[in-house]
Amino acid sequence: MATLAPGVKTGPYHAVLDHIHPEPTSFIRKYIFSIDHKIIGIQYMITAGLFFIIAGLLAEIIRTQLLSPTGAVVSAATFNQIYSMHGTTMVWFVVIPLLTGAFGNFVMPLQIGARDVAFPWLNLVSYWIFPVAGVLLFSSFLIGAPDAGWTEYPPISLQGPPGTSMWCIAVFLVGISSTLTGINFTVTILKMRAPGMTFTRMPLFVWAQFATSPMLLIATTALNGALAALFLERQFGIPFYNPAHGGSPVLWQHMFWFYSHPAVYIMILPAFGFISEILSTFSRKPVFGYKMIAFSTVAIALLSFAVWAHHMFTSGMVPWLQLPFMIITMFIAIPTGIKIFSWMATLWGGSIRWTTAMLFATGFLITFTFGGLTGFFLAAVPADYHEHGSYFVVAHLHYVLFGGSMMGLFAAIYYWFPKMCGRMMSEKLGLWHFWLVFIGFNGTFIPLHWLGLLGMPRRVAIYDPQYQFWNVVASSFSYIMTFAILLMFINILVSLRSGKKSGPNPWGARTLEWMISSPPPYYNFKKIPAVLATPYDFGNPLPYIGLDAAPGATEATPTHTSHPVPTY
Image 1 (tube, one colour):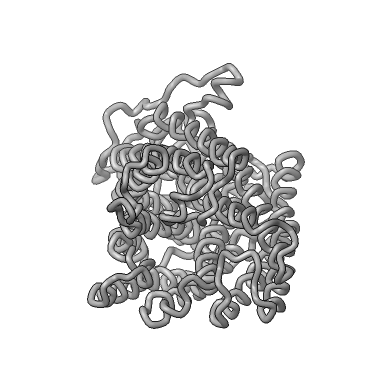
Image 2: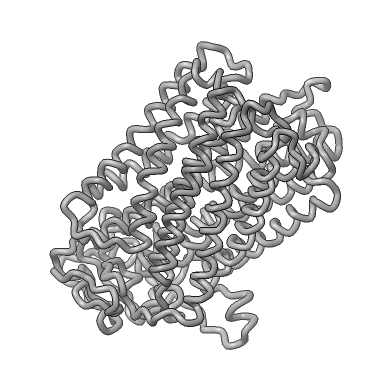
């Protein structure tokens, strides 16, 4: 164990400091059924990346269908299945697994100075449930995929194709996987932080995972209960949601949205953590308002459980109940606004270096903020009556989840790829990727706001010809966005093969994962370091002692000389 400086508290780190299993030697145990958190994180990334490609192709079928008012590409029934599967895949099989399963697994234990997560075998089980659920989900196309949207509202979902029952099982399994991950991450952060790493010294990405993990535990319980009831009613006729037999379809909405609105923050809080790390590193400044960002993350997590019914203003909710949900929904914007202004203050006066990761981080600030502003319209009861069920909701959702979560994910990929693979991604291809995504995304989804306000309903395969022009514009820009994402995958493959060696710390960052070699060794740290201060003060020496740091892994000594880092 590292020798502690006077006054450094050991913190919660448990007595078994050699919490590391023997390194496997066989290919199967090392790369397939691995219990190393880093390999599991990469497995999540590859698997979710494949699902992302499938979901993207489904999205392009949707946009191609909407080029013409008559929708000549697929039938209306097939269109319903495609948009249902696109939404399901993006929410449960792409965004959440990438944010928590991939980056949470790879980065978080390194940032807290741990050698692995608390329960490595549970981590292995959590991962392997995920691809099994994905195979089950897409197998539903063989017998008739679900066709009631990613929300699968009864009574439509009760009458849906047989694949709807497979949808219930697949999403239920993903819920189990998420719950196990939430347990694992919560215990890891509480019990395995390095000595001296108090809560107010944790990296902000760790704070984001710390707030997200209990949400996975609590919210997923409601979803899995709702899914089990839907499956039982479909297969055995037990009346939960069918009003003809005494059930209530509104019960599904309450249970589904009690999960799904916290799920919106499950899909965005880790991205907030990405942005805090990246903006600080590339502006060479401490994060402005560190504690306010950390505590506002917890505030968002708590408040997210009190706003679910704003999705149900048009479901027949009594008017006196609409007002408190409207007020609380608007109130939750306060902690989010704290983050936005703190990030802007972090940028102010910084020595900014415009890497691809930094561009995506600032692009995130623009697109996510715009999505948050459109959320005010949907939070207001009178406006929601007009916009609910229209393309305005589709536009808002994508500005929050793609403009927020996916922009943050792209930034994280470019930022942590050198740590994962030991090689740099091409900045030239990265710049093309950013600008084409930014232009394509805004060109696709800004017109959908206008279509929604004009009255075009969502989830329709055939529409009034008056809406064709803006649908053609949106579809055309969506092809640009798809090409840009293809460039990212090309960049990853080329960089894996021939990218420049990164060294341990190409960005001059200060969190613990950059203090060891790239890729990290199996055991992460030969000696568990002691933490003396927060990791974002670029004007002071590194706040770690007792660390066998890789040569050159300091903020003042760049290890990738083609991109010089300012020294302080």
